[in-house]
Length: 322
Image 1 (tube, one colour):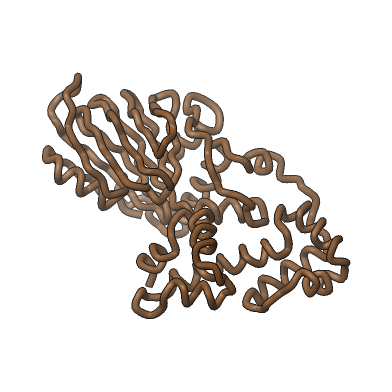
Image 2 (cartoon, rainbow, N blue to C red):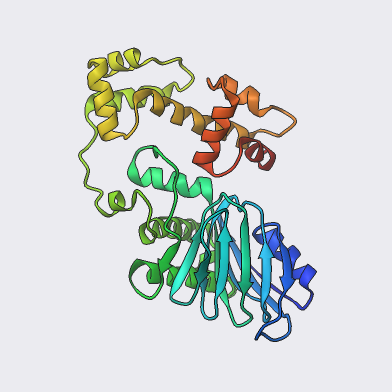
C-alpha cells in the first residue's frame, strides 16, 4: 500500500490523473467563488479500494459514464452536487456524504473550489462478496444503498474517520500499514465497516446476526453444490442428497438461504464463471464459451444477472483478467 501525491495547475493533467486512479472523465473549470485551478490529489490503492484526499482550488464540473464501482464522496468542507442516471440531484457536504452506485451515467455538476474531499472507490464485486460472506449466503437481489450517509455521528462518522486515518498512514513513510499483514485487515475493516455504516436491504441482518443455524439437509445440499457445481443438479436430486422431500428442501432453502435450491446452484455457478474469466486472457476464451460451459444457455439473461451481481459486464471482467 503506497500513496501517490499529485499536484498540477493543468486541467488536462488533472483529468488524466483522476482517470488513472478512479474513472474516465471530462473536467471543466467553472466561474465561481473559488480561486485559480490548482489540483491536489493524494491517493492510495488498498486492494479493491482507492482512497483519495482531493481538491481542485476552483469550482469544476465533471462528467463520467457508468462508474462500475461504488463511490463515496465525503467533503471536509464546501460541497459536491452530483447526479446519477435519472435520479435526483444529491449534494455531499461536511455533514452528509454521498454514496453512488456502480450503474448510471454520473455528472458532478459543481465541485466547489473550497471543497477538500475524501473520495473512496470500492470494487462492486468485492463489496458484494464481502456482504455474502458476512451473511453466509448469496444475495437474492441487487446491493443498493441509500445515497446519504450521516458523517457527524455514529457508524458513518467512525467509518470516515477510519478511512482518513488509513489514507493518511499511507503517506507517513514506511509505516506498518504498508505491510500486507496489516493492509489486508485494514481492507477488510473498511469493506465490513461500510456495510455496517450505510443503509441497504441487508443492514438489519448484519446488525442482528443471530439467525438460526441452517438445518442439516440444507447444509448437505449446499455442500454438494459447492463440491460439484458443474454437475447438472435437479431439485429432486438435491432433496435426495439432503434426505428430505422436494417440498421440504424448497421451504428450508427459502427460509435459511433466501433462494430456491436451483437459484443457489446458479449463484455458485456465476461465482465459478467469474473466477474463470478473471484467470483467463481475452485471446484464450470467450464469455459465451465460459458461460455455456457452466450451464448458462441464454446469454442475455446470463449477462444481466452477472452485471447485477458483480457490478460489471462479463466481457469487462475478461478484459481486466489474465
